[in-house]
Length: 380
Image 1 (cartoon, helix red, strand yellow):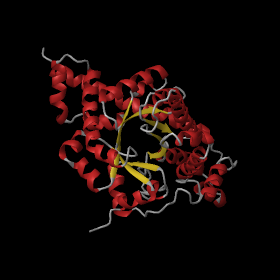
Image 2: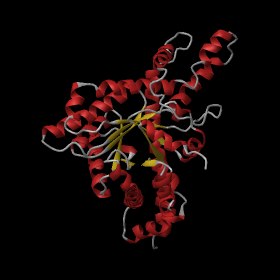
Image 3: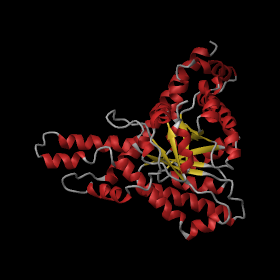
Image 4: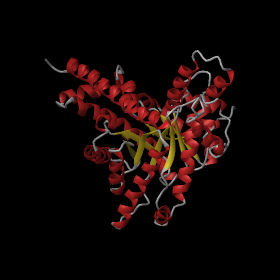
């Protein structure tokens, strides 16, 4: 029997979660098989994933029709479908949650992306989602925006598990880590248990390389200087992994801080870095490069089904998250070279705006397609 390399990754302290959730996966037993036999120990979802899962899929029609009969508005019908899928996935992953003492076994669901810049609305929806789904192993996704981070702090203080999403820059990751810490400190100051709260910081990868590679390709057009071309080409496909390795160094600094050690002594769980956006967009790159290069302790990698399949087949597993760290710092610094001249902070800002848009558009599209289906199924 061929080796499933996904199972090797766990030995290095990294958990593999799947970036996909559909009712078909749940109902067919495929998800349970992946959890039981293939080393999958968590699920992440987002509005784009649910749009693909629900739009045009007849498996949801009976429940949509039931919602129409109850006179529910379209948004509530959407929630009923999604919450049901999340609950069922949580139940399948509950044995993982129990056996790992709450380290793994989580299913993530995002608050509506349309409220990414509204702190109070995010807090309100995170509370409601957590209560209505009613599973200890649900994790509420909140974007790491300037409005999202105060919401992270507040809901962590209330005992709600949080997946801080859409993190691109190292600074934004560090801010999310301190938001988590402040939330725990607030809860601990109230004399409440902090040992049952979990959080991950979703640090995005492939979108960074896609953005920067596009800028490099534009600069390469019309260049005759071989040395300059080589200097530019050397950056391609390297920035996301370098950025992630630097973020991991920041994670280590944070967990060595006195503030963290005080919380750890009270039973707090570390906020693990989660590598997201891990499917390779450029076919000339290895389809598992965002897995192979970032295996290491206290991390999570969330993979779409195609990358899960590829990694099970041919990942080259080793602890590499702390290899080439000096080179990572040098690579990021090299972007300031006048010959390269890429403003990484500007790139990260662009990616955050674009990232929210990539969730808002499918969310609105799904609402529209559901509305059309509701109208068709509604009695005249």
